[in-house]
Length: 273
Image 1 (cartoon, rainbow, N blue to C red):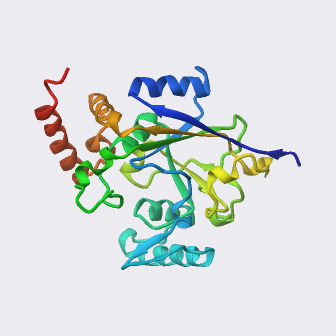
Image 2 (image 1 turned 180 degrees about the vertical axis):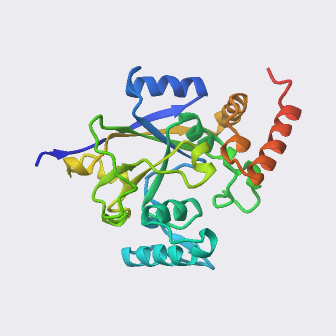
């Protein structure tokens, strides 16, 4: 069977929304819409699904192994019954577990490049604070961000997430997953996933490594930086396009956060040239 590989490109820095859109055309061409995006508000050197990362609690850390991954998903599926009133399928369990913060072998991507740029330019998250004195509302503005993209192969065979005969944990290679959306947030953020048979290996390290043709859905991985000095202007431009907490988090919490953030923008930035 003929092998397949994907390449990795470091594409420099994104300076503005307009510059990002030009970069997308440069990478994919005007007629290719098979790009998917993800953003990080901090600098990231690699790309690893959450189950493959180190997790910290009470001054200790652990990297979960495959057996612990299975145990966590089984426990989530069992205990979530009281919330859903039924036993979720394996795929639904995986999607909901990822959505609610359980480490999984899924990586989140979006059809919408501006959603990824929003998360790269500014997203409040107290997991990363450069120093204890930094406030969560400004910490992400003081460090560079990262935008990633994958370019899809034109001839992939789409995974059937309604097929219960194959466990998601048995899917080989790196495959795209077009989920059914069990939450409004996934719909608002135009969510899509990749699922990784080896979620402990950085995607960059997998570049140019051979996969079975049927087990690889992407041909290119691209990385851009978003420099801290450009973040504020990018966030303001995205606000003009209605890319903000209110639209990306369609729940009461997202509504409340988006309203006061927009009010600060109107009050503090309205007279800028």
